[in-house]
Length: 283
Image (cartoon, rainbow, N blue to C red; front, side, top):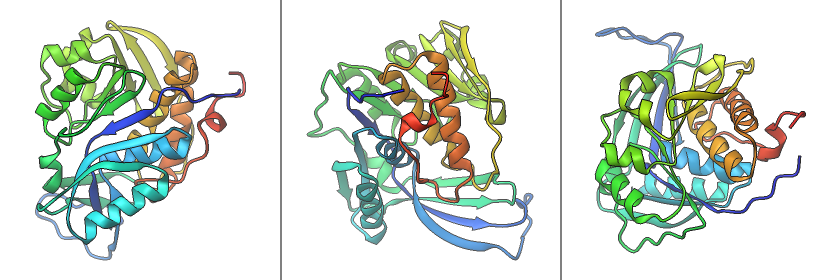
């Protein structure tokens, strides 16, 4: 299937340095586990989604903030290398955001996020075009997300993670909301949203319009190495799939395939092929 990119994609969200300890299993409360290995890599839900979108073949622009420090420069270099435009990423005196992550041998994780410069993301000097798609998440200030939704004249998608109560007017503004099954349960007000994509891990994903299921796609078998960036890769792929004219089922299936590819890689910003390579052969 020949996919042609039309509307550009802009991502508003967090940019983090991920500091990752990999161990055989996750510790319980108060427990110390030895034998881990330590790594650091680019992360943050916003940056992960922007990098995935660029690698999948979309023209991605990032709006966010990093510190004026070595970590910030490292995060910007990673985004640029992925093909993301970073002119609208602000440099702040606050340190770059950091996520402290523990990952077990099955790829499951525990994460604590220290927002740093992400708490100072703003929209000063940022312009939005009607023909672009805006994708945001909730690792930055909710007030900034609401302002962006109000100012942006075009298609607005929200990955409502981490889960938190959302004002009714924001939900009404969203053309698309993307959540996992736990977040869907934690935000009951999403039952009245226009369009909600829900991921179920290995069990695939589904799409709900005005609370009614309208499409579903099965999950793909994958060898799990790291689940940190899989949901973000799904978000980028699904938004791009809808943008590029795939049917609901095709877009879900392609996004599931991208997520399965992502969990097989150690990076939170995994290497990905072009989106069309993930579209089922029957599409």
